[in-house]
Every structure is written in structure tokens, then in C-alpha cells.
Length: 458
Image (cartoon, rainbow, N blue to C red):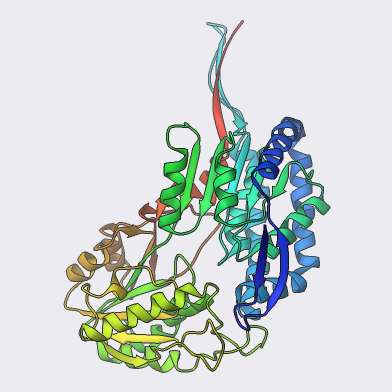
């Protein structure tokens, strides 16, 4: 079978690739299983040096990598460059902290009893990394960099919508010195993913939608392997009564529409206190109207095409539902056929409520709803009225007020006066339909090792 890589901006064919069938994927697993022990036995200093060379190659190849990313997923070129450059800090964090995160821990040293108790860690073995298309460098490196540093072999299936980027990542890792059987890219769609999960892997790390994550969890249930699922969100932000509504509108709009809204941590719901509601909506809409939609390779473009054509219909349905239920449309609301097949106008609604799909279901596109609230308590109740729990934010000059509100919000990451932000020093984790497990931080390194208890007497 073959996989066609199509430019979402022009619908032109970029490249055709042969996919991996079940036999090829089984062979890849056995090659990785054979190669992993030798990789794990290499000194950590060698593995760190190889990942440092990988980092250097990303810098050296940055423009080519950004162009490839922009062509196959439709990410505006400036944002593609930001992603390739932004991943360097994550790699640095993992390289700098892996030794301390995986060091031996002597918990008892009793000379009188001639007893030492220690905890040492070992790699999981061979893991499957089923990655996402919206931020392939970020979400991929969250997994394969610490996995490789800690001695695992990786079967890496990039999204079928970002396969060329995945292959470019594999080339850079191999050129840096990672053995080809230690990091093996798998080309294909859902069938390839299912065949990969059928292998006797030691862990699966997935980034993507709740629906697919649920299927993965069900596929490996009962096998007693490590499962981490980084899934979607319906991330809320609250603008409190004492916020400078006009001053913060630009930043919140960027948090909602950056990468065309195709981020699991994009702002997808905005609640605004009634005392500042009208001023905020006016400033927010004014900012969104400045966004330039066009060719992703044009330096001026801020809004590119949706990567997946099927998502256009999802947004159209949410817009129709919101209008039918009484929402006020301020800008956008339509497929932008004059710009290309997968384009959708940046869209802003006010007077929304939770009867609307726009405020309940993940949009994953340039559409946002703004809802008026009368109190902090109402805002908290609405923010928690969701099956997701990825991020949430509050805008207010009062830190104590913000912390009081955020303590009540069920989310893995919370923000005060910021949004749509990720730090390698902090765990990236979800609740409910937003997933299980953590990437990033020390926890995101230790996710790829397993402890062994040592009882040493003598």
C-alpha cells in the first residue's frame, strides 16, 4: 500500500510513500528488541552526546525542516520555524537532567547490619511512540528523546499527516549516531498503528484525540504494559472583573488561534465577567480581524489551512449549531473557499452557552466562543463542566484571587495571566478525557524507566 502526502493548502501531491505492512512492522519490532540491550549498555555519556549531535543537526537543517513541516501540515512558515527552534530547549532539559533523574538511590546503608537497600532503574525495553501531526517536533521529542536517553528502543509512528517530518527526524537521529534498529520509523495510517500495537512492546506512548486514545487503551488492556495517552482538551480561560480586558485580549486571541487553533492546549472556551464583557469582546474581535489568512509559505500568513480536511465539516457543524441556539457571530463562520480547500475563516462568537457544541466539544480549529458570567463561582462551575481536563487559565491582577480560582479547577496545567504555554520543567499531564500519564519534567524522564529494588547484605 502507499501513503499520499498532500499539501493541505493547495491539495497538490507532495510525495507518495510505501507503507509498512504487518510483516514489516513485526520485523522492525524484532530488530529493535535485538538492538535495545546493547544500546542500554552504552554509557549514559555516549547517549547524551548522540542526542546533543541530534540537536545540532536540527539547528543546521532548521530551514529545510520548517519548509517540510509547513508543506505537509499547512503550518504557517514562521510558526514552523518557531517549533523547530522551540524544541531545542526541551532537548537541553532532558540531556541536562537525565542523569539525576535516573541515578541510583541508596535508601538505607546500615554498617552494623551489613545491609544496603537501594533503588536502581532500568529501561522499559521497546516502546511504541504513536505521535501527532499538530506539533510533531514538540510532542515527538517529549517521548523519543527521554526514551533514547534512558536506554530504550523506539518504534516511532509519526502521524500520516506529518510523515515526511517524522522521516526527517529519523534521518537526523540516525545521522547523529542512534543505531537504525534502535529508532525505527513506521510509515502508515491506522492499520500500521494497529499492527504496531499487536507487537509485544513494553510500552505505548500516544499523542492525539480522545477517541483514538481510548481505542489504544482498549487494544493493550490486560497486557500489563506502560500506557501513556496525551489527549485533547476543551481548555477554558476566565477573564475576571478586575482584569484590563482590552490589554489582555491580544494574548488570549493568540492562545486561541495560534497554529490555526490546532493545539490540544489552545484556548477553546472564554468566560468573561459581565462587568468587562463588552470591552473584551470588542478588543478580541478587533485583534482577530487583523489575522492574515493565506499561503503557509508566505511570511505574512498567520492563519493557514486546517491539516485535516474532515475538520472543516466539524467546524461548520459547530457554527450552525451555535447560530441555531442564539449565539452572536462577530467575524468569520465560513469555509474560506477562495483561499484553498481546507481553509476556515477565524471565527468568534459571543452570547454562547453550554447547550452549544462549540462550548462542549473539542473544535481543534479557528473557532472560539465567549460566554458572559456573573461571578467567579459561575466561571469555575462552567470551566469544570467538561469531560476534559488539560489546561485552564485566569486573568486578573490579583494573584490570590487567581490561585483561589485555579485550585478549584480540574486541570493538569493552570495559568495565571497567560495561556497556551508549555515548559519542559513542568509535567504535561491531563485529567479525564485529556489523558493519563505525564511527559516533560523529571516525571517525563522517569516515565521511561522502571525501578528495581536491591537488597544487598554482606
